[in-house]
Amino acid sequence: MEAHLKEGKSLDISILHTVSRALRILWRDPRLFWRIAPVVVRQWIGARRRAHLIPQGISAPPFLIFSVTAKCNFHCAGCYSNALHRLPRAELTTREVEDIVRQARDLGTMAVLLAGGEPLLREELLFLTAKFPTLLFLLFTNGSLLDPQKIGELKKQPHVVPIISLEGEERETDHRRGAGTYLSVTEAMARLQQEHIPFGTSITLTRHNFEEVTKKQFLVSLLKRGCYVYFYINYVPVVAGTENLELLPEQVREFGRTLADLRASLPAIFVAFPYDEVAAGGCLAAGRGFVHINAYGDLEPCPFSPYTDANLREQSYAQALGSPLLQRIRESGVVLDESDGRCALWKKRDWVASLEQGLCRESSRTES
Image (spheres, rainbow, N blue to C red):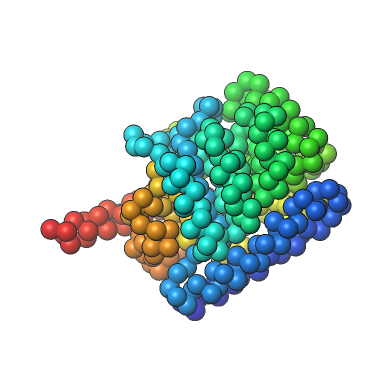
């Protein structure tokens, strides 16, 4: 428990450094600063709450990745969600989603990353987020559904930050996401900027778009559009035959230097997976820093590790966080190294699957 407490404190310090940087950046635009500052400041409260829960045996991660639907109006090449998370089961109801978010908030969650599918296909989503003004929601969206009505809702909710997916300039974006996507995204960004709504972008790094999306010129053009947050996520080849899209070893090494330069020279927040996890001591999945809940209520180590022994329809979020699967991953002693730029749990998916199968067999013997 002492080791986990030390890890939690270290991660919280890193998070609060990012929070402080966000406030310094937003200070440049008073309209944005006073819109988002109260939301950012509240993150300290979550850190204290989680620390108080550890002696009670509840280890709550600061982040929750919540895929609120598996449905999507796009068919992006190599999509992990389409490959791993579409199941012939009923998705959680809005009431169930709301109850889970409330439980996470009460355990000190700092931010909920709303994912999918396309989360805005859940029509009532922004009515749900309006009920939790003390939580930071990062809304990962393809941008196609950010119409004037939804932007009007977002204007009233400074705690919801849209993170719009891009693959680079028009050619790369439309190649992976479909013709006309880039134009749709840039139009949505223009509407958000006009309404003084801070937003970010999520970029999947592949060996083909690496040079383009890490160029300062590309990022400065997005900054001028009002984009202040950049998520870089290394491509994970969940679809067989797409291994040629993974970053090359020399690109992984170069990215570390590039990221340091971007953070030092541009007034923006940069978050990189798995690069930032390496800096935090290794993979943050399985509750070290975050967990994933899929559209059916299964609690999973991360979006790229779709294995579970806990469902939020059957137990509380606090109980599910103590699941044997998560505990065995955290306490196994297995090194979850990501310094090669590849997702640790994806590389060790056979091992995680064997843990899940072993727990199923243990459960069956107990029941019989």
